[in-house]
Image (tube, rainbow, N blue to C red; front, side, top):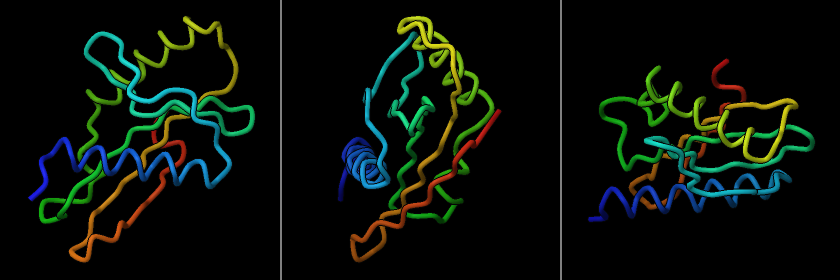
Length: 118
């Protein structure tokens, strides 16, 4: 049985590959500010995209994306603001969620929610 950290790493690696296949440019992984961590920061053409990846090995209690609450959204938004200040970016942004469910046969079910909040 894999640990939560291992499951999370599998999901983040899969999310990066998924986004790259869609043509996104990955700028940062696991970027931290204060108590928040942005899993992936990428560019989708001219849009700066902040991506939260949620990976679960089961969905008994809900889908992975259901575990992102308003507090988490606020932490990520604050971190995104700091990142934008750091790189002096003031153009269009978006917050996405990538939800990954690891199925019993180890296949990954990936769902991409563009513009998930704001």
